[in-house]
Length: 362
Ligand code: PLP
Ligand code: COI
Image (cartoon, rainbow, N blue to C red; front, top):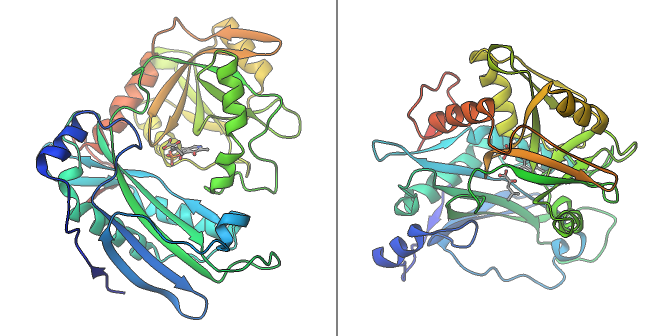
């Protein structure tokens, strides 16, 4: 499949771009171009384009607007020290998008086409990849049902795949300060058999009320518990959770196992592989809120952090629920969390060796 290329006639000037890159924020600004590829049953993927960034016209009866057949991905392009650009594990995002597609009865996109789309957009808009330390170009591939039909007995037969790109600064405006979290016992993110492991917009729509409740209780983020017992810890906000037991040479990691209700994070997966190489054993398992609290109070649990593409590693400093609260560590980011963060960022920006071939040069 070849891309039809139509460059913007009015790209932002270098001065306009620099003004944005000086303080990009997160998810507020977009580059000059986007990728669109159409799908139709019987015809497959077709009409691939690189075109100027802009609005998409949709029929009001487009299936996605009614029944939310949608999914998305998120990854970043990083400016390397030598000025070149690399993405991180883009094939892992392609594979996850296709697993999400299976759950949402949507078409899979060939991994090569997914990665070529990213490469074409990033290389066209390469001047938008920030050079400031810690900044990056966030890439947002997504796909949704465009079939004009209100019937709900079958999935759509037409879809649009789109990639947009957004320069990003620090995800957390506060910087790397441990966040406070609220244990949500009223709301759940995902139930067994549901869509928790698919990266579909509805999961996020359903999360806003829980997040608002966390904020109303003075917390930064919401922690999701399992839907049945409201006891087993699953995720924090839109990140996976990692618990550090012990310290120094005796530190080890535990992260909730992928039970089908958690999003299988690529950052999580990368840390599970990297930590043991640094002498930090890492395992997947189960942890209840009682074990979390007891572990912090006894000093057995020394650090807790959320991990995801946007924030990389985000330490958790305190936990609050309707009937209890406790703190983790001394209010500063822990040494194991920061060491893992440095290691992962080092690989992504090309300043550390890449033992698993995760770095994908554009
Ligand atoms: N959990 C949820 C619910 C997410 O939305 C995300 C990020 O997109 C993650 C975890 C982390 O995934 P990744 O490390 O692939 O960014
Ligand atoms: C992440 O990249 O960690 C995210 O949670 C992305 C989010 C904006 C959906």
